[in-house]
Length: 90
Image 1 (cartoon, rainbow, N blue to C red):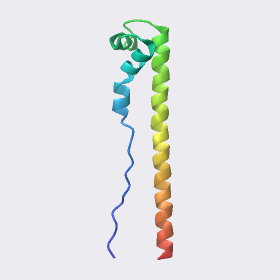
Image 2: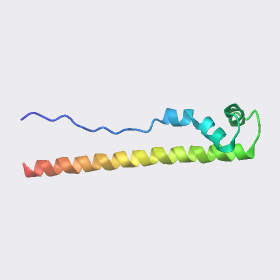
Image 3: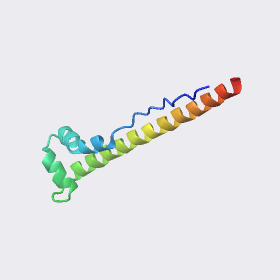
Image 4: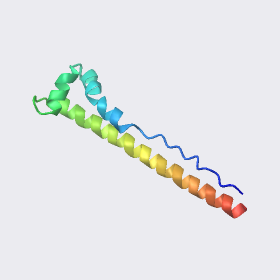
């Protein structure tokens, strides 16, 4: 009996892409230039509104990544249980 390959394919959220677009998203939301958001992030300029928006966006990204990790763990657990059930039936 040949062993089956695992068909485990989790699609991770591309963290680099999410972080890369943060200045643009914050800038669009606040109707400012992305370079200004970048300067605020690097502490070259000060803006409480932009800082708060950056923090909110980072929290949203963290929540997305955590949700993706939780879903991946759930899928993995389901696959393990399914594999155990198949083993018992045979």
